[in-house]
Image 1 (cartoon, helix red, strand yellow):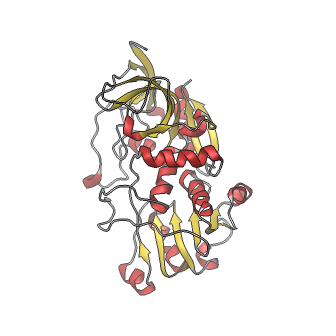
Image 2 (cartoon, helix red, strand yellow; image 1 turned 90 degrees about the horizontal axis):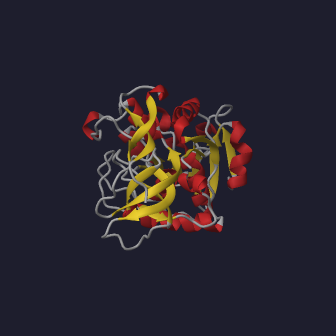
Image 3 (cartoon, rainbow, N blue to C red; image 1 turned 90 degrees about the vertical axis):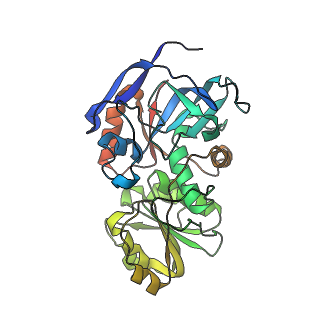
Length: 336
């Protein structure tokens, strides 16, 4: 059982990657319902740099509160070091992975140890190493909750209606925009696993990677506009979202749906005239769903692509890599 202190990355102020400090901090104690995890690897996700920036891209009314200094990060893979007395389904020595406390920003994953809610964790697939397991939770659960099963009744901050995934299967065509990224490459594989036809949109450098994952068709957005080429799609999962997302409405067949991971602006009259649906949700921690995804990972039915790894002490370099964009899969920090 460890005592005293650990190394962690903390923010004392907001700003660019240079504000990430690698320093000595106390090891946390697991509270009720929690376990202490010796962290082996940490997935790097967009909310990490949103937190670093001060959450300026989130509307003030939906912005979570937090105090500085803060340890960023939500995605971990590691080994259980200690368990609270009320935790019965995990034991010391278990290898686990999870998305911690999201959508709050209290994951504190950029560290050598983390106190984690047992309900946010699943056992790490035996055939998947810690680096690849750490790349799965947020991106994989986002794709899962958008496409397969929402898995909770919490209202979305982005819309009043409950998000409902489209039934995927043979005869269904899915377009994934931003298919090479973390959420995108999971979404492509999950849709293919259900028998859907998948059109992947990304830059040309990712074509062979995405076809290897199962993409039936590919659009290089640097050369062609997907909305000019594609018609009669059942579902668009737009992992890029934002201001330009509405252009994908014209790719849909009547009755189709556009699922933006990052909401943009949509004309309600145009949506109604086209007879389509725009819907999104906010990913939430879910250990049971992660266990289902873990079974697919263990069977090789879904795999995690790793863009690159960086030691925990080099979190700044990892964020600088993320800022350059065109990421293929996931960026991961290694703590062991």
